[in-house]
Every structure is written in C-alpha cells, then in structure tokens.
Length: 197
Figure 1 (spheres, helix red, strand yellow):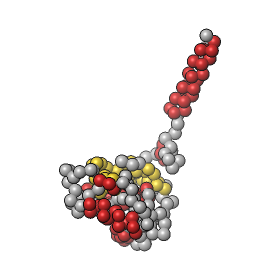
Figure 2 (tube, one colour):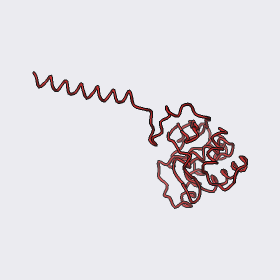
Figure 3 (cartoon, one colour):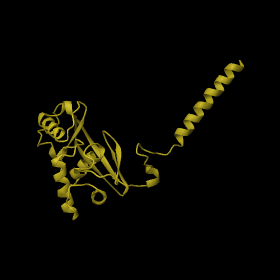
Figure 4 (spheres, helix red, strand yellow):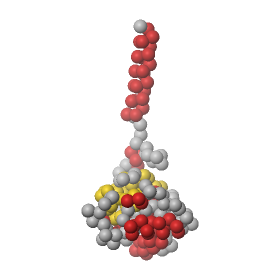
C-alpha cells in the first residue's frame, strides 16, 4: 500500500511540475525570440498564393526551380516547398483546379530586430542576417525576402533559393526605397521593407 502511495505521489508531482512549467513558459520561438517581450509588431502584411512541393509543382515551376538549384549547386528534393504568389498564378497557368497545390497565405510581422512569418511554415529572421550573392543564398531568410518583394508588387517564385529573379526584384525594391541598389538584403533593406509592410 505504501509503495502504491509513493508511486502515485511521484507521478502526481511529475505531472504538476510538467504542467506548471508549460503554463508559465514564455512564448519563445526556435530563434529564442520572445514576442511577448517585443510587444505588438511595427507593421504586418499578408500575401496569398499557391503552395506546392517540388514533386507536385507545375512543369514550368519545376523547370525554373531546377535551373536555380543548378545555379546554386543544390540538389532539389521532392518535398521542397515552392510558393507561387497570386500575382504570378497566370504566368504559370495555375487555377483553382490545378492539381497538387494548397491555397494559403503567409502573414509577415515586422519587429525592427526581426521578422516573424506564419503560414504553411513559420519562422523568424533576424534583421542582422544578410541575404544575397556572397551571403545567405537559401533557407528561411531567402523565403522571407521573396515574400517581401512579392508584397511590394515584384512577385517572384518563393522557393527559398536566391537566384537572379530574386536578386533583380530586390534591386528594384531598393531603387524604389531610395537606398543602394546592390541586391543585398542587410539591415537598411530589411528596415525599408519592414516599415512599408
């Protein structure tokens, strides 16, 4: 009887500890950003479009993705995400009846020191990150860059790879912002995008 009582007490203590630590945990994401401490975002925007995997993407999307992968010496994977903003749907002949897509959206929140993106995949990117040739050329920072140029009405295929289309769209946006049009996304370009969301 005493053994059973000790066991019950131990399990109860563990559960109380586990749930109390969860209920009082700070809302910190994978990059150790605590959004509760940051408060409300400075600016927010939403972009809508069509999400595909490389494997299920329309042929033209797939071919362009393969070309960018070759350019960056990356091997495409079947489950790589490719997002086509609504503004580009007709370019790729995408309609609501196109096979293999998920229609969705990404919400971008700007906090000066970082951006938070929520959607099919969610992540944060620090404004200390530098994106472009000779810097970060793939991953979430590039994905964010591609979403930002899309919001500025220079949409590109959002495939998380920094290729010529993304480079040229960044330069166009930089010219519009009145900052150095070098195609590199650093602090001043992040800020220019952020305050114009």
